[in-house]
Image (cartoon, rainbow, N blue to C red):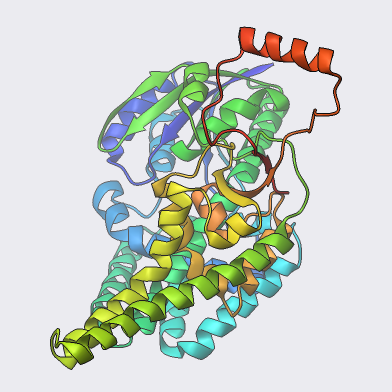
Length: 462
């Protein structure tokens, strides 16, 4: 059984620091495998993936455009720090590139993903043609720059091109900030959010793809000890699944940004990790119908909230002036913008549910069954506009219907899901003797149940 050491890395980091860490960590390894996804093996396959998933393609490229200044500043290249370090410290040892591109992983899933991508992309193109054209142009331009860098090793011209693309993107961002059209300014954020959702959605599949390739390399090239350099987000999933691919996990490496990292024990890493993406509760059936009804109820409540305060302000202002028309209009606009997200964040953080979910016996939990926190509720709510596209939560509904645990895009980004509340089994039919004995036994070994904890237990939506 081959032994693999997993080197966690931050893609944008100081090259000299990463090189020193990897040189020490990979000592004794027969080969180095490094995370390096490619968009298709050929130009034709790459174009095919782009045409299938235009929204996610632009989203992924948008993330890289935002990161480019850091890549150029700290990596002095457009390639990841661990990839550059692996080539620098390998010496005579082979360096193998592993991983699958997120769009390639998506191509093996339901055709509804293609439909949802095109509906979202076309909706944005119709509503915001100029912004969509610019974002698509930057994405295609960046793809050409990276392809040139990978295939021909041309470095300086690609750095110049990256700087030019970054300047264009920053200039457009500044222009958007001074525009009065809030929707046009906001649309630019939807693409990076879509890219982040895709990365989260395909994380585990990429872990499995890399482990499978490493196991194949160990068998094909007779490597007994390998070092795998990959992004730090991949570490927990890889450590957990390595044995399923015939690999023994040695030490792992936890990075620091612009500073030397530390070695860690795999078991310690798993114990401290809270990002397990697989629910640990038994599945409880499909609740998408309930969620749809709960959403309708929630929107009715939101409309009432959004209109009630402005109506009250108008009534107060008619009796006693509270300011100019501009002040009243500003307060009304601020309330109507903030009340919907506040409704979701406060309800899901404090109670785990909104009014609609409460009426339908639903609650929001983290993917491991633990309560939804403020941070998770904020992320979940922030992606609501993307789920709503092109209208009536169509994209979110498609994603929820095709994911294993009924997660919409906001759930995938936040690591949450919606579960059904069920009453515990009714034991009133038990005979008096058995019930009394059960109560005595329970009193002897079980702590008292706090108020509010009894009556309902969450089971997972699938």
